[in-house]
Length: 208
Image 1 (cartoon, rainbow, N blue to C red):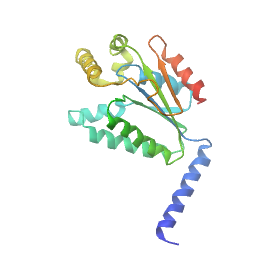
Image 2: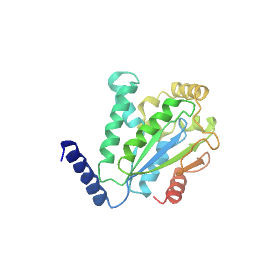
Image 3: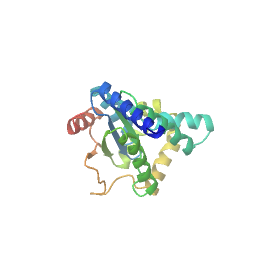
Image 4: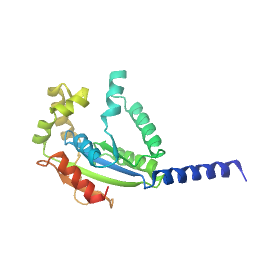
């Protein structure tokens, strides 16, 4: 037996051990949507009614900006990959990852596929939940206490509002009808829905 075959067998039994220990299939929820649509808040609510853990996008963004003094995309991506790879190798049940997906940018499609590939190696079930709300509501949410508590770079609300408007003008972060090809997908207009209700809708739709 070659060394390569031995390594493959060891990896196989390690994955089988994790599945047996976990007892259920690993799950990943992509919580996607425009700036300040409520991804993190809905994710927090979903963790309260499931065994999922929340990995919102600013968990890595904030310390990277604090360390480098600017948005260093390469460092952010590498650090996220460590979390994804280690989580998918753990005995945890599921992960919620929040992401602002610009549907008119091929690089964002590629990144989503990259993250999914990490979890697919462990036979994970993957779900996609898109939240949508008009700019006027998102501008109000951009200054909420919960958002500012967890996202230091948003505390200059005036600058953050300008960035939100600029992103709306330059990127399309709301999918077109039929654009998302995945089976486990749902779009929710959460303009007038509390996060707890949205979380319950997600949990019931995908039986999480």
